[in-house]
Length: 415
Image (cartoon, helix red, strand yellow):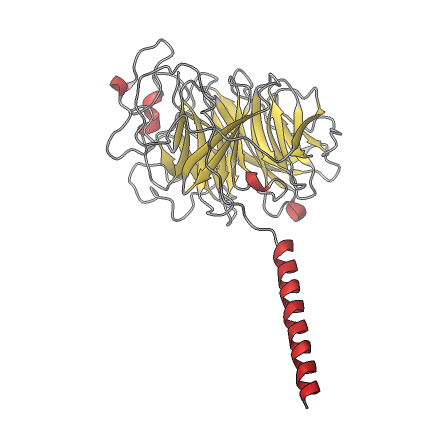
C-alpha cells in the first residue's frame, strides 16, 4: 500500500512539473507587447529655437532621446522614381507608389518596379501639387479599388480632391476613375494641399487638407463653410459619415471632422486605441503632432508655436486659447513632417506602436515613442542619407518602407 502511495505521489509530481514546463513554453512562444521605454538620453534637437515660446506642459517639445538597441538595417531597394509622394502596401505584400506627375507604380519588396500606371485625370503638379496619396479599399482583393488624393486644377485655381478607381487586371491602368470629394473652394496657387488618407475600421475615409498657404486663405482653416485646413471624413461613395460632428450645423460642410489645421501631410490610426493621429507642418517653427478628436479646433492660425518666415509673430504670438486644442508635441526648429505610420509589426519589439514620421527639410525619419498619449522619447533615423523623406508605411513582411523626394525606395528591417 505504501509503495502504491509513493508511486502515485511521483506520478502527480511529474504531471505538475510537465504542466508547468508546457505552460512556460507556451508563454515564451506568445508575443507580448513591450512596454514603451522613456528616453534617457539628451534631446535629439540641439538647434536654436526660432521663438522663446514656452510649452503648455512638460514633454511637449524637445523630449529626451532614445536609441534603438535591436540591430536593423536600411536598404535602398529602388531608385529613379519620379517625385514619389506616397507608399502603401497591397494585401499581397507589394507596394503601391504614387508619382506627382500623375502616374503610379507597383514595386515588389525586392525593388522590382513596374512601368508607370496611367488612367488618372489631369493633375496640377506644380510645387506641392500632383497625384498625392493612395490607399487600397478594404476589399481590394475582390474589388481592386484604390483611393487617391490629388491637386485638381479648375478654371478658378486648384484644390485637394479625393477620387477612386479600379486597378486593371493587367495592372497597366486605373479604370473608371471618379472624383468623390472636393475641398472647396478652388484657389489659384500650388501650395498646402495636405492630402493624406486613412481608413477607419468601417471603411470610412479620413483625408487631411491644407489651408492653401496664402494670407487670404489662411483664415479659412477656422471657417466651417470651406474645405481648407480640415480633416474630413467621408464614406466610400464620398458622402459625409452620419455621425460627423457638424452634419447638423447650419452652413457647415457636413464632411468636416476637425478644423484649424495648416498643412497636415501625415495621418494614421493608432493600431491599439484606433484613434486618429496627424502630423502638421508649421510655419517657421511649430510643426506638430496632434491627436484628432471629432469637432475639435486645432488652432491655426489663431494659435501656433511658430512665427512668420519673416520673423514676425502670428496672431500676436498666441500659443494657447480657450476652446483650441494643444498639440501633443511640437518641434522648433522644424522637422517638416510629411507621411507617417505607426509601427505594427513584432519584428522589432521596442518599436511596437511607435510613430515614424518622414522629415523633409530635416532629412531624417523621426521615431516617436508614446505612452498614455504623451511623447516620452524621440530618435532620429537615417539622418546620414541626405534624403527628404516624403512618406513611410508598414510592409506586410514586418519592415517599414519609405520614399524620398530624390526618388529612392527604402526598406527598413531587423538584421
